[in-house]
Image 1 (tube, protein in one colour):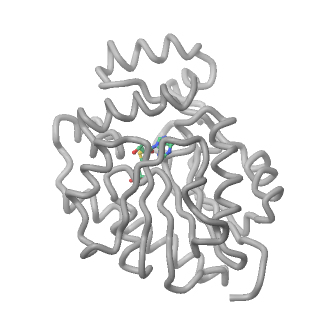
Image 2 (spheres, protein in one colour):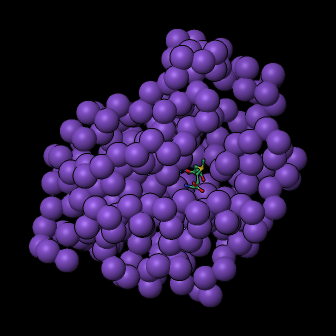
Length: 247
Ligand SMILES: C[S@@+](CC[C@H](N)C(=O)[O-])C[C@H]1O[C@@H](n2cnc3c(N)ncnc32)[C@H](O)[C@@H]1O
């Protein structure tokens, strides 16, 4: 699976049902998400994550935040309440169209299409915070590792990152299917049985592996919280400190 396939799948998911594809909940299929409820879920997540960065003493103040894999702008809108400017990057044009429809920031979010395997569109050290959640798990691990290296480049020294990824599957039926079943079988089940508009891959990122990629870029996981993941994944939110000058 390469970047083209990722883009094609997420373009189809974004065209068919963007809010459900961002927050997959069987009860919300067929337009079940209310816009305000959807955005409120983003505000709750960001408020909690920023509080935790404050507790850890690594919260950058104001400035510019990157929301990588912004989807329909659920988290970008919430970040805009705390940062002067926010850049929301996504590979799916219809997702970005939905994000622009839901933009409540008064023009402080720059939603951008990026279908490159890197973040060459952004300068070194040009963000105070990089935030990503529910994105890297859907990418082939080598591609995700490339973006992680790019995050360490685009965050300024002394800035921070928040990275949400599943660490491992839980021993439930679905968790075990994802761990052991061959991908072509899962793909067919998602399309035929679950009627997904396009398949959604899942990859886990053991913390030691994530930590090694970040360390090579001068970043260190300061804390990891188990905050969500439903019944099938242990999903962690990692708070990452980027080495450099004091804030
Ligand atoms: C499950 S959604 C999560 C959206 C958002 N982070 C949130 O939590 O509300 C995953 C998003 O990642 C985007 N995505 C997938 N691969 C990407 C890539 N290589 N670069 C940028 N965005 C990507 C998808 O298009 C989709 O909008």
